[in-house]
Image (cartoon, one colour):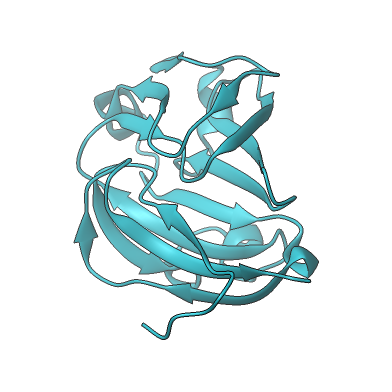
Length: 158
């Protein structure tokens, strides 16, 4: 990857394989309507903070987490597709709104079998919901470990 003076890293939010947003089976995510980013097909159920920042929100259904990065970049980590329909079943948040997190800290534990039993796609999406704060985004490829492996690099807008 090309290196930039001010570049920042995002880590895998969960163990698995990176895929482009265009391969996510949900129109709102794959169209880019909600932001720019990537997805991971998970192989394990621990969800990690992709970047250092503050927890802005944890949804009532415990399936999505918003992290406001120290540089003003806002990330949405959304576990599974249509998982809001589970009403929190299978999700155990490890953070609360207002908590400070470091890249790699555990956000939640997810029982992926609950999602499979409900026939819900497991795709875990990471979106920059305020893309105007980023001047360039480069997504890595392949498999990685949640909270440890590099998933993407970005350059915050000046």
